[in-house]
Image (tube, rainbow, N blue to C red; front, top):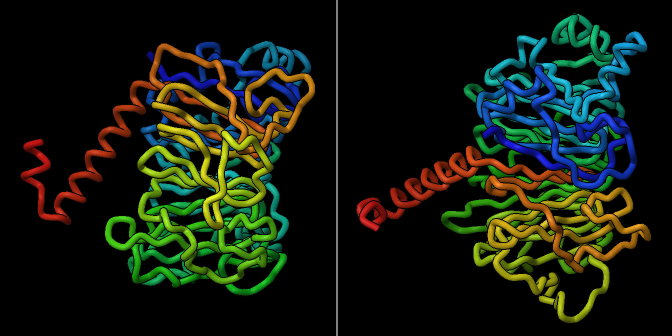
Length: 434
């Protein structure tokens, strides 16, 4: 059985791959069987799902990239358009037409209105809104880079110019980009030498360069080159780093902090990477999710903490914990959040949602569109015969992946992590015997 995806939230430009354009879509199962272009890729197994303001990106285990690009679709004949919109799911697959993308993408990042992807050759490409330098291309480089557009097919089918982002001048010998992360109007890249390269809007310090700018070109930050970055987490305008998780765990933060979303005990914006010493549970963190003006943390004990603009809530739901809030939720195994909503998984099965539901991004059909508060969780009645594998959230939308293959992939990943940890601790034999 192939992987299955349930989507809900805003779909006004078909960013959820649903043909019924609407600002409010209730949970819907994507029907890939009716899409001969997408189905073969879905059958490979889905590695990750990334969502932004007007885009959903699906990366498969065979490194194929699927993108919703209906907002860029070139107008064709009326008959062909009506045929396209008759399908329940109408996801576009540029990798079917662009050789550069086929079996070649290792990471993808989606911001509010820009998208970047990284190839096996460690080349970075971007398209979308180019204002504030958020895809790393200056106006002069756009003119010089006209011939570097991926293929004519991309231009013919979609009204897009996709550029290669020039970063070679910032890289040392044997250094290359390994992963990419999008903020609302900016981008952060991580290299194999634990350095960062950031570009875009840096008016609140979110790009970690120490300089306030409304248009920052690619700049290298070497703050972590003697540490191991275990995780990079981005919100609209703030970022967090989990470092040295195996030896001496530390949490570093930067960016917008006017709502106390960095958990530092003050609300001044932070322009340089700063250690958060208020986070007393940092050694227990296994995942972090950042929203527009709030942050949530998942610990290995299944507890959830938060900071930032978390609305007041019933005393039986949340309590204050220093600079953070502790959610009174137990056995949480996954978290994700959009701009103003969050999703939680309990015991790998039950889904809870909280926050603003004005676009049905929480999955509820409430007519009053009440903001229930990030901290006031309600169960979401969604089930599937396959295991619940992955949560994803964009600005005003959400997706849930059900997959047997993804569970196997994650199990193998955890086993590799355990093996590495066992080797580090010289307890390999003990671990195998157990």
